[in-house]
Length: 249
Image 1 (spheres, helix red, strand yellow):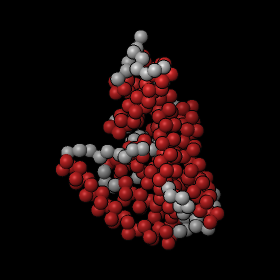
Image 2 (spheres, rainbow, N blue to C red):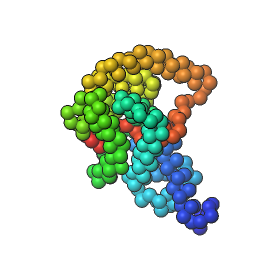
Image 3 (cartoon, rainbow, N blue to C red):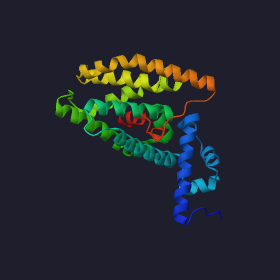
Image 4 (tube, rainbow, N blue to C red):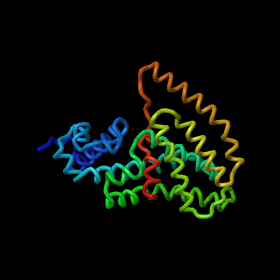
C-alpha cells in the first residue's frame, strides 16, 4: 500500500493529483502535449503507472484535467492583472499576451492533430473545458462594442478569428523566431485595427520594435548564462491559446 503523505486520505489524493498535473505541465514544455505518454507522466510525478491510472484512466482524461486546470489559471491571472476600469482595448491586450504566454509555456499540436490524438468524444469535452476562456474573450468584444470602441458584427465569429490569429503565432513562438512581447504587440495591433480601433492600435505600434529588442537581449542573456527560458507563474500554466481556437474550428 502506498505511503500516505498527508493528514487524511483526501488530502493525500489531492496532493498526488496535483503532482501528476504539475508533471504534465513540465513535460509539455519539453516534449509537447501530443508526445507525452502515461509512462512519462508517472515517472515525472514519482509514482507508478498503476497509481496514475487510479487517478486518470487514459491520456485523454489526463489532458482534459490538465486543460481544465490551466484554463482556471488563465482566468485567475487575467482577472488579477487587470486594473479596475481597464478599457476594452487594454483587456484585449491582456488576453492576447496571456494566451501567447500559454502557447509558449505548453506547446501542443495544431487543431487537426490534437483532435486525432484525443478522439471526437474527448475533443468535444475539451471544448467544454475551454469554454470559460472563450467567454472571457466574448465579454471583451461585447463590452468594446457596447462602448463604441469596437465594431463587432458577430461576437462568436469574431472571437474565433481572434483566437485563430493568436494561434498562428504558435510555431514562431516555439521556434524562437519571435518573442512573446513582440508577438503580443503585433497581434494586438492587428486585431484592434480589425475591430475598428486604429487609435489604440497605433499607440502600440512603436512597442513592437522595442519588444523585439528586449526579447533579443533577454535571449542573448539566457544563452550566455546557459539557461533556458522559464515561463512565469501563474501565467506559465495559462491555457494554450490555440486550444480555444482549435475547438471552435
